[in-house]
Length: 299
Image (tube, rainbow, N blue to C red; front, top):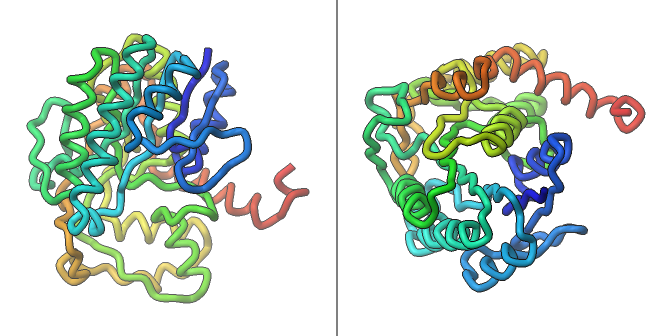
């Protein structure tokens, strides 16, 4: 069976390409702007191309990781955010339904306002800002277009990936260079290892699961605490991390503060608890050591 990974060059997309094959699926990846060998070009805003690609591949499952996630950028580019995060997913959902494929759509904790976390799948959403509203509307559009979709809400996705600017890599790069790093102490959520997110959604997609599922790490911590724990595990100087308030960053778009997602439903569906933060950080640290050893060490 084929698995179509839309947005395969991204952090989660790369994890899906590796792990779908391990799970017995034949991965087919797409890229938008950075050509990759053995991948298909696809822009989700080109609805005709979306329909044509899915019709030709005829996958059993479609993983839609492609999204516009630059939160502050979305505030001044609302039309672009809607095209990529709402109308694109809707087109993918319709095309997936037409070939009988299950769709996994990756969403975010930003659909909540962050005043009363952690949130369950059934809590009413209250998105703040253009990015958050686009993802909330994307969820609605997907569920209206197909009855065989999983909405995987996640947050603070990180992993060892030198090509990525995920938060874990930012901590490693900045502290390795001896630079100070200001990190919010009032943004509370669940750091999520990219490989865990990918593997969990593959497992869910292979089962009879539909609707919204929170797919995040088990532990809910402040962003600054996460950075400090990661730095200590990597043997870096955690004293270079300066915990500050979100207000001090003067960011354009609002951020959910007292946020995070509950993992009770996920644990029940997987038959085991979500990954702990210590496990996730250990995996990150191990891969950083392997990378430092070079190709022979990686082998």
